[in-house]
Length: 91
Image 1 (cartoon, rainbow, N blue to C red):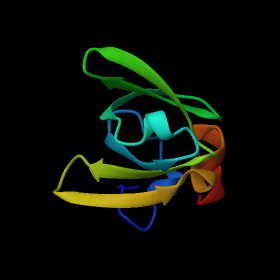
Image 2 (spheres, rainbow, N blue to C red; image 1 turned 180 degrees about the vertical axis):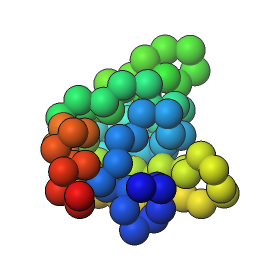
Image 3 (cartoon, helix red, strand yellow; image 1 turned 120 degrees about the vertical axis):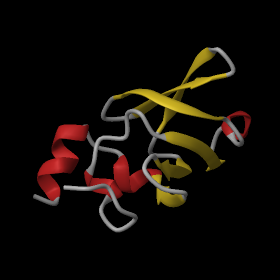
């Protein structure tokens, strides 16, 4: 299944560019980079040469789809599941 704005919450996010638009930890707002790992509760983002661990549940994120110039905004609660469980949700 191809990643689109409508189904992104059902896909693995590793490899996508992301920006933290809002977060309960104000120090994470504005962090952007490449998602290099994902767990049920965390995104690991490579930003400025370092890995930043960002809790999913408390943020709002903008993901850039790799194959086109489209950004998708997702609430962290929508993606606060293990990637394999999200894929099953929409299967």
